[in-house]
Length: 129
Image (cartoon, rainbow, N blue to C red; front, side):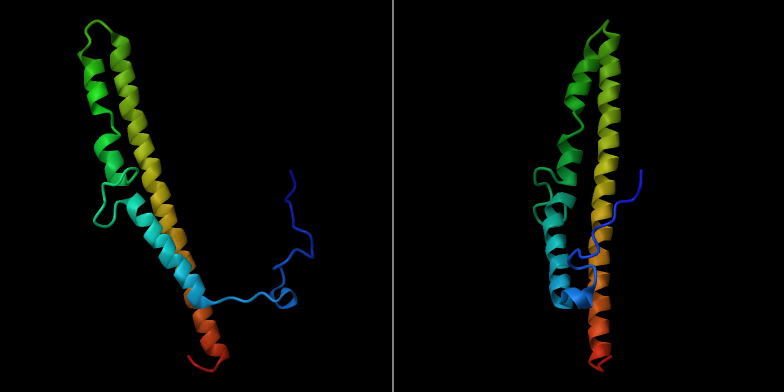
């Protein structure tokens, strides 16, 4: 399958032609807002056990009560297997969740770095370094 390319006249492909402008301050504001939005999800801040946060999932998402109940049923090997599957699924979900949070953090850091680059470029263009 070939790589898809946008049409040559796609807006924004050529900054000078299309009048593309940027604001280092606005880009930095976007990064800061993304960080704020991610805090409840990652478990940062005073409300770190908010529903859906990493801490909330760690505390309540492992289904340990259900697994204990399944393991307590005698003569039902399927219960033990199901309990093991629940635990493995939880561990894998948490690993993916943590990876997603880490990737969001990396993306935000890249946005911040881009804002810094634009700020330095603006300063150099204005003769202020």
